[in-house]
Length: 228
Image 1 (cartoon, rainbow, N blue to C red):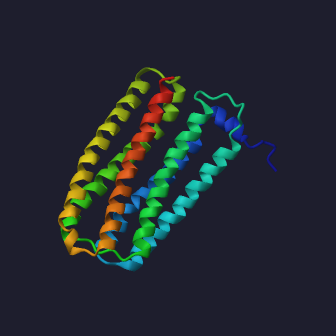
Image 2: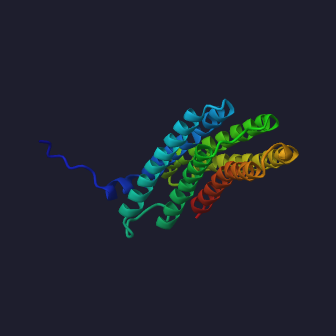
Image 3: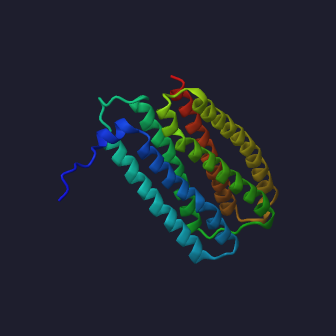
């Protein structure tokens, strides 16, 4: 039997309070990665595969919840951290909202048979691509937090992360433009759909847009607490 003690959570947090947040973000990003194939299955009217992808997203969202809850329950209030405890809790909450949104998209497509207007597919693909890109950018920023910790939140690493945040915010503004064009495209074909489907399509478009909004919220929160 080994006499070596396993490191305590307090020790791990002192070493890097960002490890659980990074683990959580990787799981959240895994949820987002399933959204494009989910819509591809919808395009092909492969309802069993739509339900399969929706179930995979739900399982990953549950895993993300477990990581978040463990992080919340085990972070000591008196532990010295390089950033405020409340900032870290707020950051993991921001991340978790993205996973919740992905799950809600999956639920809608799982429980309601949605017809995809041909006119909507091209702009919807553009929105999906933008959503993937900004989510990937958000994950890349979170992955840099250990490097920031090592250099004391300064120097070139801080400049690098600040530049990444600026780039993410630009991407979010570009997605706002795509969102506007997507809504306009849907408006133009509303008369080809039943009214209830129209409502759900607007809901799905808004949910996709909210992933980008929440990614920007994460970036803004990081910028605030890294500049303290």
